[in-house]
Image 1 (cartoon, rainbow, N blue to C red):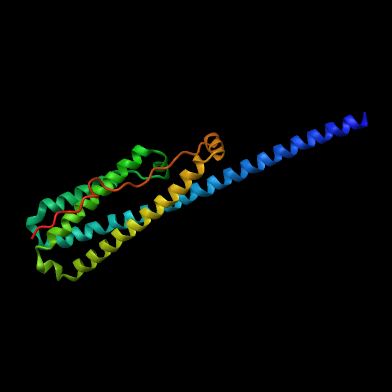
Image 2 (image 1 turned 30 degrees about the vertical axis):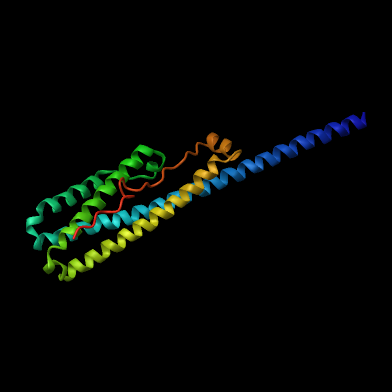
Length: 201
């Protein structure tokens, strides 16, 4: 009788130990996913900060150019419209879980970047504008902001890759599906950016 009781206690103890190990692993996996998701959110906020910086600089740039290049009204209106379309998007952390909303956000930002590029190309036709100190400062700030955006987008994509890899690996994928963790969208290159722009002299 004592031997049977000892075997039963050992078996129950073994089952409890295995259950504790599995629970410990599950908690650890869940915590790693939470940490990785928070890194994605932090990366997203850095990207968003840089987009906001660009958004805030645009009115000053448009007003500076408007004073010198009055005949370029269409280009200025396109920049203003692109900025307005970006401003209409409500950007919340939930956008990271909605690939369609994320894609719409990226398209609006790409459209604004494209309009700004056209504006800066047009300004090359106005030597007097290139000598205006406020324009030089704004152009420099926008170029710096575009570089920061590129860096933050790259960092964001790296954190998204880490997160997506973590939640797709087995057996952590089981914990991810039960806990509601979903893959995050990457920033994609602008359509046609793989082709070099034509150079004309």
